Amino acid sequence: MAVMIIAALIAIVAVVGLWLVSGVRVISQFERGVVFRFGRVVTTPRQPGLTWVTPGVEKLRKVNMQIITMPVPAQDGITRDNVSVRVDAVVYFKVIDPVKVVVDVQDYLQAVSQVAQTSLRSIIGKSDLDDLLSNRERLNEGLELLIDSPALGWGVHIDRVEIKDVALPESMKRSMSRQAEAERERRARVISADGELQASEKLAAAAAAMSDTPAALQLRLLETVMQVASERNSIFILPFPVEFLRFFDRNPGPS
Image (cartoon, rainbow, N blue to C red; front, side, top):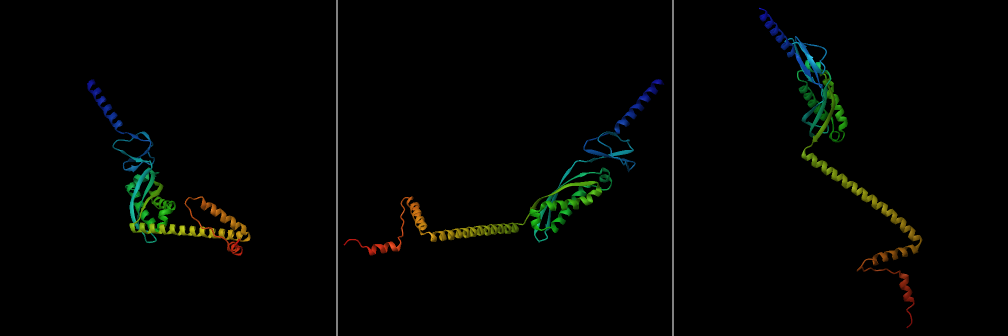
């Protein structure tokens, strides 16, 4: 009789031990635990480490608190200046309220993805092509506000949103290439014209200085002759003043 009582006690202790062990849970450092007791949420989330839930009475649901990187599929849209573009982005967000994430929204990842896509299409329609190509910082901030407004009600905080790429039609790429080429040609012509203007001003100043001192013109002529003479196999014609030739006419020399 005593043996049977001891065996029964051992069995009861073993069952109780298994029951207690079955309620042990481990929560990682980057997680929080939301406990449901008879379908109702225990208000305080469980912290990382070992925790225990009542088997058959409580259920534990773990929520990841790390920053999540979510790519937003490329969205087709028409900009405010009637240009068809295809834009994709990436969203960085994290859970700040694990209870809201579990209770208030069925699938917060899907919800954030959908609101990000609709917000991206809205940004495309409100922006010009030049803004999408060169003013992305302001667009990223506006896109972040559009997504963060509903996400806060789900217990999610949008940390950062970035537009990754803007794909243009081939015809638009060719038009922009021609525009850039025409702009470079215009700048080259303006620079060349400025150079010609500056050169003409310098030449006018030099001519004015030489007209005041005729000897300077002769020195410049001799310098030019020296430069040409330094080249091999060069033939050059040296002009003489008309007065010099008339001097020979007036003085033919001895007959």
